[in-house]
Image (cartoon, rainbow, N blue to C red; front, side):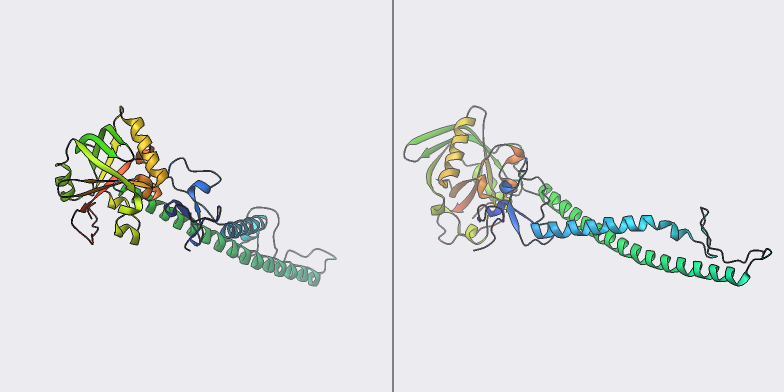
Amino acid sequence: MGKICVQCGDRGFTNAFVYCVKCLRYAVHRYCLDVIPKTLDEYVRWLCDDCKTEEKNRNNNSITSKNRATALIDIHEISENGKRKNDSLSVHTEEQPIKAKSNPRKKRCVQKTTLRDSTTLLSKTTEENETSVQEINERIKIEELEDKEKGFRENLSVSSAEPVLRPIWKGCFSIWDEKHDMIDGITAHTSVKACEKVHEEATHFQESLHFKMLPKFDIWPKRFVDAEPSDDSIALYFFPSESGDTKFDNLVAKMMREELALRAFVKNAELLVFTSTELPALHWRFQGRKYYLWGVFRGARSSEPHMTKCGTI
């Protein structure tokens, strides 16, 4: 059955899973969290119930040990000759002058008992402090690992694919569905990870691209069945101009709602276009904006297409 969300109990969008940062066994959808992240690429630190309870208990034990050590910390200031350094409480190890009617044997006995009790208390405090230091060190290691994981995710974000700023094509989509529709003012941008074949094919686009709208799974590439598409799969990004923004958004919404895709035959290949929600959640929106369309090329005569990492199939 695979991984399911511990909040809704459903598999849903697997690319929207956030895993427990400690055990990595349990996951929850971003959209099932009590506080939904503002952006899909926002780092989320989430703990499952088991790990949350374990961390809470550890923190409580650490605080208790720290308070106990603070209460007895002055014991550590006993010098090698048995005296406290800073206040009037001291352990006498040297005999004082004996006054008249004093009992030297009794005095030595009191001195020996006081030193033995202080040594025992110091030993207990040292053991407790060692336990507290060990717990603090373990917590520091956990936080360092979490910081490394956060940095790793940020580095992934920096190295992710993105569209080239200058568009490689401007024109319109001519779409045949139950009715014919035209959407003007669309721009295509190659991915920074796209190969030279993508550039060559895109430069031969006509001003109007003629698409047929089909069920997504009728044209879903076989490679994406074996492994979900990622940002490396993108050959072209498609964005609307301001004038065609509403019609473009309506097209994207329909394709998402009815699980549809677009197919066009260009000069040397098929152009397959999907919505951004088919990608991992981190890439659903470009720079936190609206959903968009992305495309890949597939050889028109290939019965067993092969996916490469430059956006061609």
